[in-house]
Image (tube, rainbow, N blue to C red; front, side):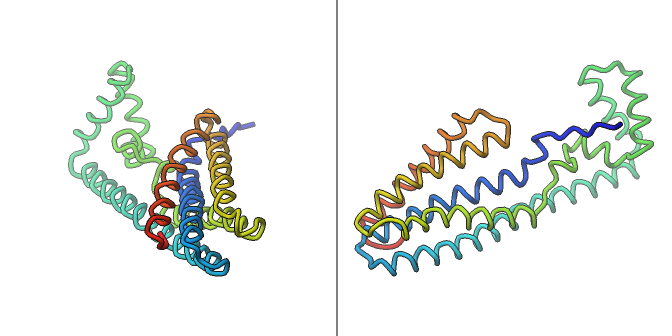
Length: 229
C-alpha cells in the first residue's frame, strides 16, 4: 500500500493568510473599540463602529491579499514561460544548469547527468521549475484561496472583541476588550504554532507582544485625539 506523507509546509499558504487575517481582525477591531469608547461615544455608536470596521477590514484584507498573491502568481507564470522558451531554444545549456545544481548538492557528475536525463524525459519544465526556480505545487501562489482565508479569518478575529460589548457593562468595556484581546492573540499564536509545528510558547509570545504594541499605540492615538482610528 502506498503511503502518502503530509507535510506541514503544505499548509503554509492558507496558514499565513489565516493567521495574518485573524491577527489583524483582533488588533484593529479591539483598538477601534477602545479608541471609540475612550472618546465617550455612546454604546450604540461603539457597536456600529465595530461592525463597520469589521466589514471594511475584511474587504480590505481580501482585496489586498488577492492583489499581492496575484502579483506573485504572475511573476511565477512569467518565469515558467521564460524557462519553457529556454528549454526550446537552448536545451543543452539548461541540461548543464540542472546537472550543476545536482552536483552542487553532492552528487557525482555521472549520477547527476543520469538523474537529469530521466527527470527531463518525464517532465522537463516541472523539473526546472522545482530545482532551478524553486516553484512547486505546494509553494505556488493561490490568490483566491489567500483572499478567502484572509477575509474569513479577519471576520472571525473581529467578532471576538465585538462579542465583549454584549457581555460587559459600558464602564468596564475598555479594560475588558484589552485583556480579552491579549488572550485571544495568545490563543491565536498557540494555534498557529501548533498547526505549523513550531514552539507554542514562542508563537504565543510573538503574536501577543507585537499585537499588544500595535493595539496600545492605535488605541492611545484614538484616545488622545478623541477620534476613531
